[in-house]
Amino acid sequence: MRIPTDSEIRALHERFAPTPEAFELVWTHSLIVCRIAEQASGAGDLDMALVRAGCLLHDIGVHRLRPGDHYVRHGLLGYELLGEAGLPETLRRFCSHHTGVGITRDDVLTQQLPLPDCDFLAETGEEDLVMFADKFHSKSTPPRFLTAATFSARVGRFGEDKVKRFASLVERFGTPDLEPLAAEFGHPIT
Image (cartoon, rainbow, N blue to C red; front, side):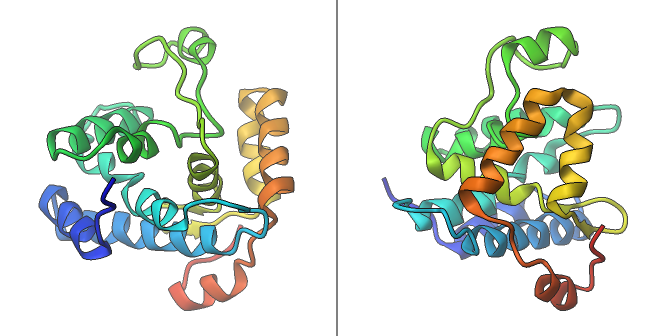
């Protein structure tokens, strides 16, 4: 499988972003997620070129969200967008399988999520790492970095199993050093 270059992925974001501001928000977030993934001490024998592409692509579906859309759909929208762009399943899955610490079929049904009733769980180490790195930065207004404790508290509202899943990812990949990134990008840490 040929992995697209950073400039090819950037061009996709530019093509699909509805505004320059949307492009800047999502692209900057994606670059930050890459930088966090690069810090993973427990990455082991992962294809880091694939991880980088996954980091840069994971939120491209945000560009397809319309007013009134449920944000949880951005992963599925990204999966579809990359399919239309001719990208392979391996890359498309980074979009649909990075939300939270994974969405189960049971989550879809019990929370009545506007998604197909199936699992959206990371299945490879590369998918795990992209999903994990994404938890440490938010595109909120203003954008911010999240500590492991902050994200753990947030995900706790979806169940203790989600907290345990996140803790296992922290144990596997380590806790990223957010201070230098926060200084570089000017986003606070919460």
